[in-house]
Length: 451
Ligand code: PLZ
Image (cartoon, rainbow, N blue to C red; front, side, top):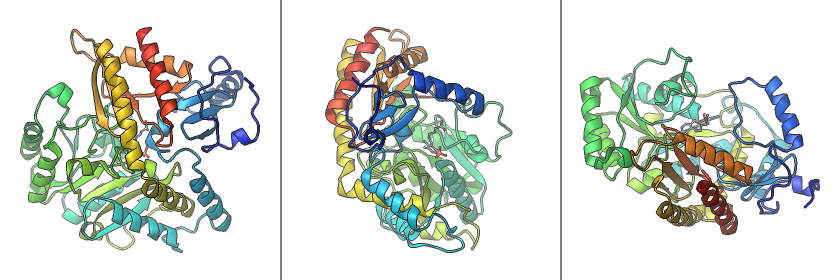
């Protein structure tokens, strides 16, 4: 095994050898040296959880500065679903960058922005008349969805849910449930945000109808629909622990919103673009959101986000009321068009579904042997394993932290999440091969027995 890499191997994309290969201590010497510079140059609040410095990635692997090849089960937090450095995406980026990198869409528009809006209008749930606007990040999309809902309804209050995650900007921190690490000491937070209980079947044991009744009761008593502009929820909660609500919960909440002139916003920043085995997770529950926020997977790794929704709501914002210098940047839009083409034409939703079945099967076998694995849940290639103390059911965050660190040392990059920090989440690139995935599950099963 060689520790030097050919220039070709640094190119990334699916031509990278699809293998797990650890050839140095971790972090390796080159990575360690660069990480030392990080400590001296980068703000301490910006942490990096894995013992490597990445130089190339593609298919299902990330290669580091020392020639180690890691199996990627995180996709940079659900972003590189089409595969890192996907050839068509990389080509679209290069071609667009050579022609024009920026004009500002609000000044000199270009077609690719409009084509992305058309694709979003076509692909998001519901066949009503839609409009879209593009931004740079998930948080910025959420901010704008709230602006639009307030303008349309003339109301101010917004309801978000327990375990919800919507971003790190001031308004989206207010919408996000978890204090640490996201909010602590960063207040005061935006006003007129209220929090309702979500549906968390493993922990609350409620039916969807009962969980919805509990949430709606609270909203009616503490906020009042006459003050409420919008309800925002992730159809499957991401950072909060890949929590799939009980059947009927989202249906009841959307129906209540419709009856009460409240805009229902589905935050599909993490769940969107084939990740859950459907183009959007809302489809699993048969709901049609009024507004839907997208980012992450939309552009194969380039920063791009969108708000898509009912034309009459989206068009409520006055001319000049929405925008930003970089929103819908042409290079990011070119990448999105190539990525969307791959989602549709390579049927990546079906691939996500198959990955989900493989993961669930392997995790179920692990659970048989180890009662600390309390719950397996998710849809498609967005699967979670929640770990608990089997006698008390208490969350076991320490086990999960140890497991993720041990897997990284073996060359498997696996992320954690959850309100209680006790969830291992699986978000592999949809370009990962079955063999690599199977091998990663062997590592997880084996490391778990050592903890
Ligand atoms: N809405 C549902 O999942 C981003 C956050 C990582 P940005 N999730 C990953 C971290 O620790 O910062 C996310 C999300 C949902 C909104 C966002 C925010 O998207 O692109 O990170 O702003």
